[in-house]
Image (cartoon, one colour):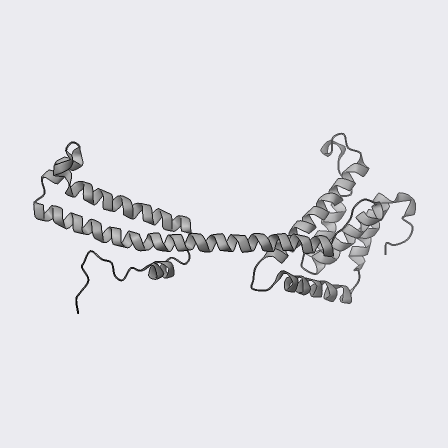
Amino acid sequence: MTRPPLTQAVGVTPDEVARLGYLFSSKDLRSVQSKLTAAASELRNLANGRQRGGGLVASLGALLTPEQCHLLLEAAKLVESVGSAVTHAKEKRVRSEADAKRRQDARRIQAKQVVARTYPLPDETDEQRLDIVKAALILNRAGQHRPNYSPPQFNAHLRSLIEVAPRLFGGMTLTQHRTCALSSVRLEMIEELSHHLAYDDGSTVDERLQALQQKVAEAVAQAVLTADERETLRQWKEALLPNDAQGAAS
């Protein structure tokens, strides 16, 4: 059986490159490709120094024997053979990344649509703003919003948004500040829910929504609102509806 020439990197196939570089991006593979191309070019420059004239590389090449120059040219072919496999693997990775991006973009759009339909969270009236506070409290307790805050910490955070020193909100009235604060909470919830549903763990957007809703249902089954949450909601009701804040918030 005829052995392949030493200048042909038979073992370095595009599939092997992809296997070894599965943790690397097409950008990383492109960098390796460029280095190999540059290396092969430098070997050829050194080997052909006699013919190319001027420069230090030419002077160095002129000191080599014809056999040594031939060896350099063979090495350049070997490097180019490896580079060819890397190039094919890179091109395949580029296509794969483009496909993955298209899928993720479509999933992100779907997630936003699902959230807009399932959690519209309007904030045009004070009653709707109170619903935003309630939704944020329940989602936090279910571990689906601001999970870095424990429920007591999140309650304290929401209460802190009620009062702000005048110098912190410039020309806005306290009412305007509170309205803007809840608008920010709403946008943050929508963004976090969309990001959560868009995450691709192998399940569909709808399946991730069902899992999220199950966690919320379990939290509500334990308590529609905890005592701490009722107090937070009461404080916000008093802040938004001072004339209608009698009794505990429901």
